[in-house]
Image 1 (cartoon, rainbow, N blue to C red):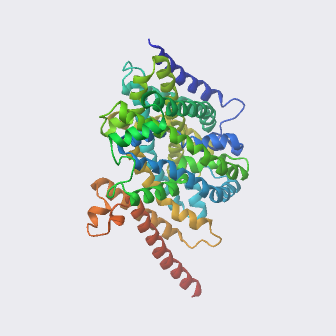
Image 2: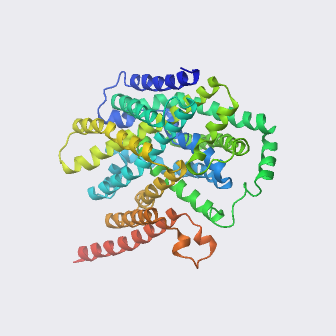
Image 3: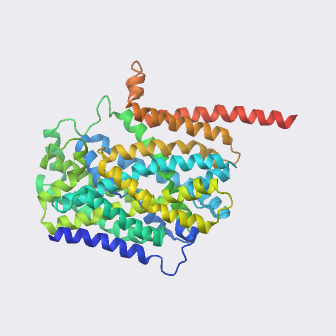
Length: 487
C-alpha cells in the first residue's frame, strides 16, 4: 500500500471520527440535528458558509475550468464576493424570522412567509432537484481525486461508495455539527494546499507566475481574454449575476444561516468572506500552469488537471496530502447536502402528507433517508460524465428561481402573493428544464438578436420570465382579493 493511499484513507477516517464525535453532549432532536440548536458562533457559521466555497468544485472544477476555457473561469472569483455583500443585508432578517418561528428548512420559511403550504412543497421539490446534481458533483470529484491520487489503486466506483457510506454514518449520528467539525480541518488544509500549489507549480515549471502568464499567452494567444461570442463578456456578467443571486438560495446554505447564535454573525462574515475568496486565485494558477505541463485534457477530463500536474510534479507523500485534502472537500459539503435533502423530504414532503407528524418522527425519517440520498448521488456520480462546472451551473439555474419571491418576502409590504410566487417559480424552473433537456441556448432561440443577448446565460432568461410571471399573477390575484374584500 502506497503512502498516498494511506493518507487518503486516514483523511476519510478522520472525517468519520470527527463527525461521529461532534454529537457528544447534545441530544439529536430535530432542531439540534438540523440547525445545531441555533447556537453556532461566528467561527462555526463562517466554516459552514465557507464550506460552500471550497468544495470539489473549487478543488477540481475551478482549476479544470481555468485549464479548459481560460478567461470564463474568472466568474468563479467574482460571484462569491457579490453574494457575500448581499448576505450582509439579507441573512439577518431571515435568521430573525426563522428563530422566532423555529423554522429548520428553507421551505419552512417560504411556507410561513406566504402562508402557503403548497409553496413550501414546491420550494422543497426545487431544492431536492437542485441538490442531487450538487451531490453528484461532490461524489464525482471524490472519485476523480481518489482514483488519481491513489495512482489507480482504488477505482472511482469504490471511492464514491465508501465516501457515501462515511458521510451517511456521521450525518445520521451528528447532523450539522458533524459537518461543522470536519469543516474546520478541511478549510485549514484546502487553504494551505491551494496556496502552496498555486505558488510552487508556476515557479517549478515556468519560473514564476509572471513567466507562466507570458508562456501561456505565447502558447495559446487569447486564452486569457473573453471570446467575442459564446463565453463572452455577456455570458460572464449574466453568469456572475445568476450565481451571486443563487448563492444563498441553495437549501443547505439557507438552512446553515439558521444555526447562528445572533444576527451579527452574518455581518462579520460578510466582511471577511470576500477576502477568503481570493484563495481561488491560486487554484486558477494551478489550472493555467497545467495547460503547459499536461496538455490535451478534453471535456470532463479537464477536471483532472490539478491532480495530473500534481502527480507529475510531486512524490507520493505530497500527492497523498493533496488527495486527502480533496477527499475532505467532497465529504464536508456532501454531508450538508445529504442532510438537507433528507430533511426536505421528511419535513416538507412526507410531513405535509401526514398532518400532525411529530418532530421526533420527522427526525427519524430524515435520518433513514440520508443513506438513500447517498445511494442516488453515488449512482449518478459513477454513471455520469458531465463536467463538474456544468453540474453546478445547472443546479444554480434551479435555485436562483427562488430569489425574486424571497426578496419580495423581505420587503415591509410584500408585493407578491402566494399564487404569484408559485407561478414565478414554476415558470422559471420550467424554462430551465426546457433549456436543459433540449440543449437550447438563447442564441438558438433568438438567432437575430444582438450578440450580447444571444450569449446570456439561460438561467438569467429563466429568471426574467420568473419575475414577469410573479408580477402579473400577483397583480391579478391581489386585485381579485381587493375586489372580494370590497364586496
